[in-house]
Structures are given as structure tokens and as C-alpha cells.
Amino acid sequence: MCYTVCIKEQIDSDCCLRNITVEEGQSLLVASERNGQPPIAVGCRGGGCGVCRIRIVSGSYRKKAMSKTHINEQDLAQGVVLACRVFPESDMEVVSEKPCTPYNPFA
Ligand code: FES
Image (cartoon, rainbow, N blue to C red; front, side, top):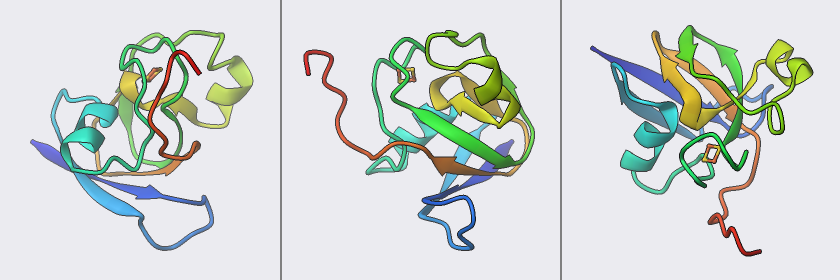
């Protein structure tokens, strides 16, 4: 099964920056990368850097544990999560929280 995820630039925007297809069991970040120029910033891919922050607007998903250094309780309450730790279980709408600049661990 596949889901469609609309990635928006702003929460109140009606238009999608990009629609991506996510396969069952695939993380949102991996799907974003496989759809070409990723609209979600890519970093460590393992929940350690916080670069891939997104805000969930709608849809259901499963998530793996996230570092409280990057995602605190207030973030979670507002739907802010790490795309590399999120696995869509329906069509979704999300907002990319950070600009799509290459992750540089030495910067
Ligand atoms: S890519 Fe580093 S936390 Fe998601």
C-alpha cells in the first residue's frame, strides 16, 4: 500500500510544495529523498540531529522514539516530529519546518 503526503511550505498554505508517495513501512524522510530534490532537509537519517523537523497537519502515522533534545513534549503536542522517525499510515499533510539546505555536521 502507498500513501500520498503533501509537503507544504507554510501551515496555512493551500498549495503543496510537493506531493510524494510513501510506501507502507517507509519513513517519510526516505520517501522524500526518493522523490528527487527533497523538500524536507536531510541530516543523519537516524533521529540524532533534528534537521528533518516537520509539523503534521493531518493524517495518521506511526512514530519511533525521538530524542527529547530535538523534540520536546510541547513540540509533540503541536505535531512537530522528526521525518526520519515518522511512518505514514494514511495520506497526510505536513509542513517542512527547516530550509532544505544540505546537512553539514561540521558547520
Ligand atoms: S535526519 Fe537527523 S534527526 Fe532526522
